[in-house]
Length: 76
Image 1: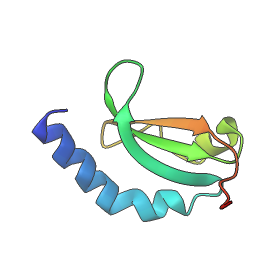
Image 2: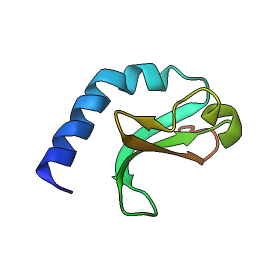
Image 3: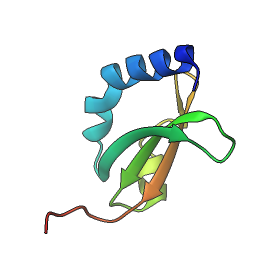
Image 4: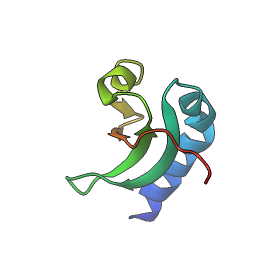
């Protein structure tokens, strides 16, 4: 990951993480690489992916958003 990419995604996350986490079904947010090797926001959800996709953009400031169903997170 280039320094510019890292700085951009850190700025986006600082600005939008709270808003994204307030979206029903979002369990966690991380930074990673998508299948194309692009830096992306990785959102893990307990709701069906299609349901969450309808509430969020596919990109935030040109950073791709990848949504994965993981189920409900609970402490054991």
